[in-house]
Image (cartoon, rainbow, N blue to C red):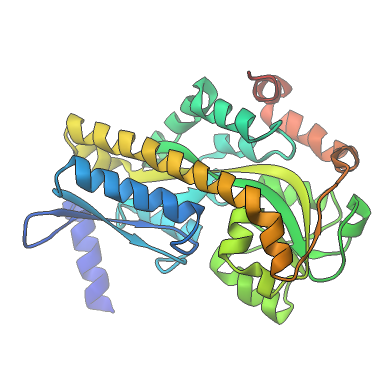
Length: 325
């Protein structure tokens, strides 16, 4: 163990963050917290394919799935340190590294996915991507996790009152924690790889995620009820160690940026597909699904929390996103 740590630190001090094969290929690593057959899988597989194709096999990205390199916070730390080159993360842990991005996780901020995508692809999203650079990251492109919904094992959720007292896993994200406490939820921040077991053992009653994640993670095996609250649009992002990115030629840098855009297209297409068939699929798997929710009731209950968010982020900044066309 000591030898491996010494080797790691030596590599870091020499800037040896990128592997090279016997054939002279540059080998990089990317990681996601869910399985390959998922919306996030579509993103990283497309990125890897496009980079390898556009560099004629000179740069190869090896993807790791299901949290095999650690939870999202650990993976971000590895990319920041340069011990891992790439990551594709939800915004769960991102505000802990880049606080300005937390505004995107405010509940009921976006009208729908089209609105959210327009914001992220426009000036606001590009300004936020630039905020990653002083923190040691090159943010290549916004992708998406999807619109988040709530599942639990206790009861169908038809109104905010049904959430009171439920012990729910939340992402390691301070905005989510504050918002859900405002709904009376007993919040339990937890890394994603731990969630299935925690639901299985009853450590927590429920969780909240987009339909894509609920299906990919097979939460239907350990959850009875899902409610289409659509309470948060959840972005995700392609991240690269900035020093690794900066060492690339200008042409290779552009290849990564263009490949990330292709990955985002594939990712969003998969989210749309999963959303279109998700309700029927989860019912087929045995879950009860509450589709029609009066979101105004949830917004009303959360009014005190929204006041705090206006103080934190600035009402003008929130309105800039809300009113973006």
